[in-house]
Each structure stands twice: as C-alpha cells, then as structure tokens.
Image 1 (tube, rainbow, N blue to C red):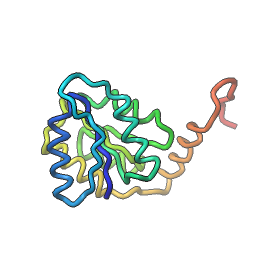
Image 2 (tube, one colour):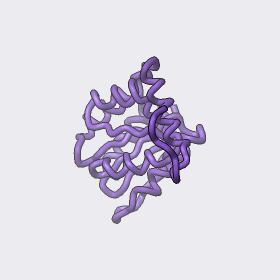
Image 3 (tube, rainbow, N blue to C red):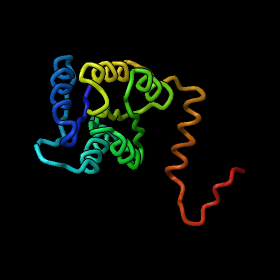
Amino acid sequence: MHIAVAADHNGLPLKAELVRRLAADGHDVIDRGSHLEGVVDYPLLCFAVCRLVVSGEADWGLVIGGSGQGEVIACNKVRGIRAGLGYSTFAAEISRGNNDANVLVLGAKVVTPELAFDVITTWLETPFRGGVHQARLDQIAALESRPYPGEDWRQD
C-alpha cells in the first residue's frame, strides 16, 4: 500500500519510528514532511497528505501532531477526506469500519510508539462495513457539496 505521511514538530520522532516500521512491513511510504526540527504549522502538511489521498496517489494518509486535534480538523476541511483521530484501537476500528476513514491522525503526546503502531495496524486491517454506514457517508458527502449562503438546511 502507498501511505502518505506527515508530522509537525511534535510528531517528528514518532513519524520516524512509524515510517521505519511501515516500510519494514512492505508499505510504500510517501513522506511529505516536516523534516525540520523547529516549530512547524500543520495545516499545509495535512493538505499535502490529503491531496495525495484524494488524487489516488496514496491509498491512505497518516498525519501526526501533538494531540492530533487540530490536524483532524484541518484534514476534514479537504473535500473527500474522512479523517479519524486514532487514540486507541477501538477508535481505529470505528473510524475505518463505520466511517470509512481514509486518513488516520495520531497525537504523539497521546499515544506511545507501540500503541501508535497497533492503532495503525488495526486501522489498515479493518474493512468498511457498508450498509447503514454507507447511507451516513452519503449524507456527509451531500453536506460537503451543498452551497452555504441561503441554503435551507431543514429536512424535507
């Protein structure tokens, strides 16, 4: 699998470890940064990963920040991205199984490297369940495509 990866300054050490382990497991890792030791803003890093996922150049995206909270918000601003915050294997199962997440966000201050790898493994191995969950994703996609000004948000 092709996995696009990025991390801000908080996530650099964890990213290095995860890139090494993912490559050792046979994944093609596309490292979009950061490669700097200093403070780095995460929104453009998120976009770099998300752009590769939406275009099909990467099968999956992985973004690492301090808590992951800002990163998951930034990723979900990109049309076609469904980013989930991976703080446990349960959260990973739900984000893939129920929400068909295509980007996983980790908080380097929240998870240990071992837990992070378990979360990633669970996330990559969990299939989307479809069914009622697909209907909900269709509703989310409709929200993405609606014009905002003057739109009537009441259900018919």
